[in-house]
Image 1: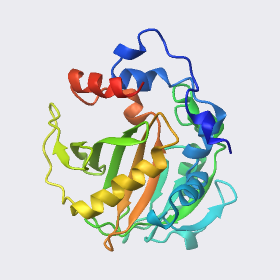
Image 2 (image 1 turned 180 degrees about the horizontal axis):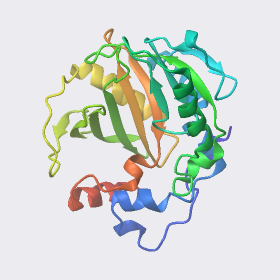
Image 3 (image 1 turned 90 degrees about the horizontal axis):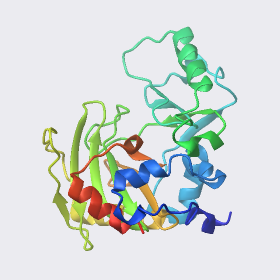
Length: 265
């Protein structure tokens, strides 16, 4: 694949230099080319990560690829595993300990996921991904154990440089935001109407490796959010490439959004 096609893939509007980051993200919604499809396809992305980052970044183990949405049996409902779609974010079924599952209910959910095209009317990168499913082994998360709710480290990168980090516990709707300095120091960013959550911050050496991994994976793009997990053995796992984070909604203050926007030339 010619990775050079992933930059300068759309003409800039006249007001580009004064647009905030979230406005620039929104502007790209309908402008992604087919080459971006490989990066948002959950299985293709794993292969690309190993090509780009080698052994510095792990990928969660794929237990098996499903032939189609109904290729599922009670033997697949292992609480150490999670069922995922290849073609969207959040199309998951987390198999939990102590829960009795109805196979018809499982299949109904998978059939519904199969019919859905993840926001492709707005986020066009997903329209290049054919629906599919696979079963993945859960990460033994450094903070939340092996419950299918690993803490996500979401790193915003512009022209291959990490600038901000969001730590996220999605199940509890808890977040913490940081600005990432050039030496990888992390400075907390206050977010209006968001409650501070005291996440366990990994050692700086671990964060340095994570930011280095984000640089290696983001260097192909003008803008991307690289998402990682961290396990109890201090291994960093790839989660996903995200080109339209938070559906382009504003996250930071007007001033910070403007300053970040200026970095995306």
